[in-house]
Length: 208
Image (tube, rainbow, N blue to C red; front, side, top):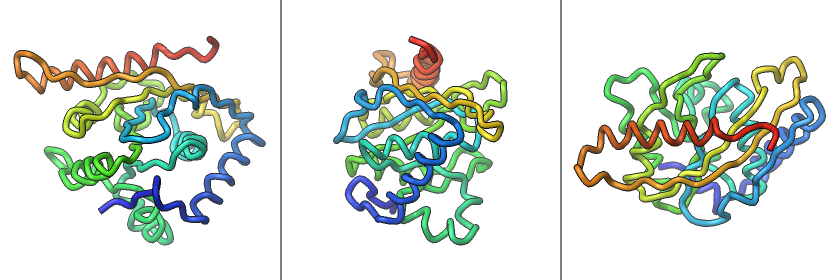
């Protein structure tokens, strides 16, 4: 079962987030806008675009100023010590990205976290875009529907240049909720909702 980081606030985790906030402020002049858009309580999905490996620590460390999140992480990380020890305790949920038909264990973990009132961070594209336009996975819609929770959009800018000390910006946008379709065609509705979430994300501009 995933940890409840919104209730359990391990000191080491808070120090890790403090370290990343300090790092990104010093080296990437990070700017974060819209933290006030994050509901402080209640189940929530935060959906963000994905540009680089810097995205999770940058996004989560500032989100943690409002509430501590759960996040989906590739299962390979859970076989690396000390990550194998800390990730489950910090609310990370392992996912097998190559399992045919999807990882039902990861889905159950995500739904459990949400039904406990947690905040789940996901990247609907499923992997780093690397300059490509990727079709979103239906998971964000499936979880929003099954758990009955809202989706808050966020967009990260220029994180692909973090190693070059490029400035990083994170902006939070609007909330979208899933409405079951009148015709009962959930597969099509999930696809439409996931596309709409990505459209909301990319409608967030760096300068507004």
